[in-house]
Amino acid sequence: MDASQTTDSPARDVHRDLPMASSMCWHCQSEVPGEYFCSRCVKVQPLSKELDYFTCLNLPRTLNLDDKALEETFYALSRTFHPDYFATKDESEQSISLGNTALLNAAYQTLKDPIRRVEYLIRLEAGSARTVQTSPPADLLNEILEIQEDIETLRSLSPEESSGQRQALHTKLRDDRGMLAERQARLEACLSEQCQRWDDLQADAGEDARIRAQKDEVLKDLRELLSHRTYIRNTVHDLAEIVG
Image: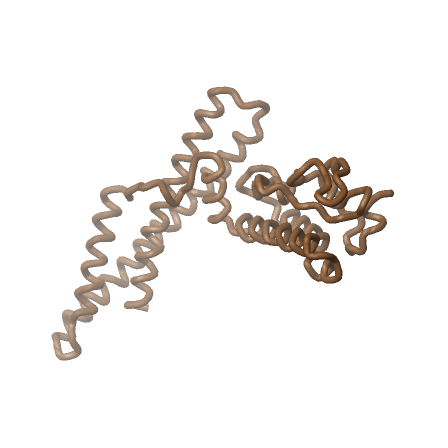
């Protein structure tokens, strides 16, 4: 008998071929050929901890995702594994339900955010973005250092000091904020271009050495853009706090 016809989970018509933690049911040791529930004992099965988030949500490893498909798949799977539907089950099934739900939630929260999605792809393909130390271009670094010095100077001025000096610094920092906002917009456009370039390479049939080299170059560019984006966003945030 099909497990989807006997389980009391509401998502009876959901079927995905996601890898399970084991090819055998943890309860009755029957073969589990990619089903969420054992066809013999109807026990829920744990998803493989090795699942990447794209596979987990039945999506291609691309950076421009179909938001609707992402959401629909997430909610369908969430209904399948939601802990509320296993409240009367034994501790093992409850634990599996919680584990599967945690994996789905982590996948959804990561992939629905475009920046976290890029960071995650880099971790999958080329190591953690957070462990790669990249410096901004020299001109950007100099601009940011000068802005930070001006911010500290403005903060250090007492109310009794020259209002003219305070006003001059305030005006300069407001102009700097506009300049950085323009630079940030250009950076976001470059980031979008590189994301599309990655997707175009993913669409190529097969993956020879030439395609792999091009992908590695895109990943390098994405990593650098994310690093530069962080420098700019942090400085813009500091400017917003002091000049509004």
